[in-house]
Length: 189
Length: 287
Picture 1: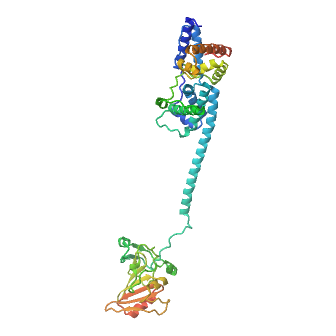
Picture 2: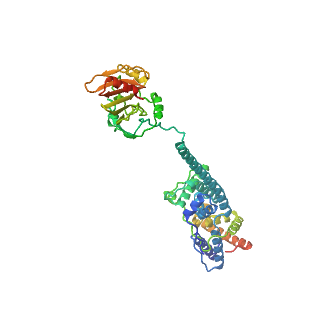
């Protein structure tokens, strides 16, 4: 069964009025592409996490004035994220990366549709997040970049400063550890 | 060091993760690989950290709701203020204590049709030339009402003429459309009803035509005041107290006699076929 999410315009209208469920839905829908972009531009999953949160804060705080001017909400979010990445590099005293024009036109990749079963319950999601946090740092980062952010093997290797073979090994170890932890905590697919 | 089969498994697992990222369900014959791919799928479906998302949504929900509330409050206040202003304007317009234009003072008896006297246009007032002549019907009122209006007449008299009068004729030509139309108040011949009456469009001069046995008596009145009298110098028309003996300007005519006198603040010209004495008496009898 595929869970159909409400229409995006409806969600935005509700979110403008402070509807929490609509806000959660929009954040959940666009978290991964924003996080992915931030990871790619910063190379640091922790900083990317902060930029992702800040992107949503900025975007939704400006949401009452957001008008559908032809740009999609995804593009709107992506531009905010790119501006935050630029600020991030300036704060670090480094020249911001040169952004390609295409980055500004369509900065976010479309979120991949969830394969069958749709979203998990909040309890299960919280349990999974907790178990991921128990992984060794490199394995956790590999999971964040490869699976949560959806980066390619090559991109992940580049960001982590490792070879693709090393990343393959890290992701296998991470998934084996998580399979064990899921079994111990009764989390099954 | 990894063996060939291990390296193949790592590559297949990586391909399975790519499939999950594309939204596909990985399919593999290898049991371990299938289980690891299921773990990856579970991770993917778990989405972003729920605690972080919930915290974000909480923060934003509070801010946006408060902002929406403030905006609504502001709009409500604005609407209420506008409504109050509209109501105030309506209330002021409906207030009976608000000043209203004074009523017209009208001829003493009978219903008369008042026609406009063709005024001579002021030389520098094109507006007077183009203004249409007024025509109105005025209904009679009580005599006392007329007297009350007459008592306040000096304040309503037209503004002084800028040039001295050259004749004793009523200075109808001095009245321009720019002046505020004064209240129509004039004297009447007691016991008689004018056959017709005409009023200057500014209301400063009135002409009444009475029909008598010997013909017609035309009484022309022009409101005046001390200021007006001083301005015009009154070379030919002297104002006299009520009931006093006024200096009279007489104009001899073979057919029509004319007498001009100032009576009760009005410059009155009486014309008719009667003798000047009779005309003078008529002028003095005006009330």
